[in-house]
Image (cartoon, rainbow, N blue to C red; front, side, top):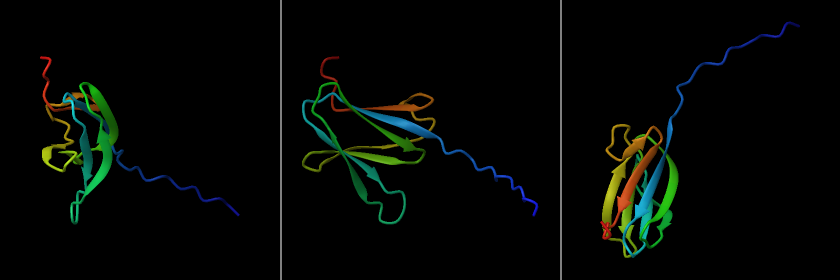
Length: 104
């Protein structure tokens, strides 16, 4: 019986990025990934340890929303992964400063 050969259908590659949060404050923050659809729940991704100069990195994708809150839940900032973001420092890295850079 002849073997039927099939060709794979090309699919567009999904480009991933690294997001790096850097804490310039002396208190920790909570990091959340925000669901893109439905209820848009905030999913805990862990703590950004107290700084200064502590970092947390994650793999992420275009249009992902990230939220930073204080340990008590107060909103600090929201960041969306976009290729033309001012924090997009290289092809694959987004750097997001959190807290004040008191030493500058």
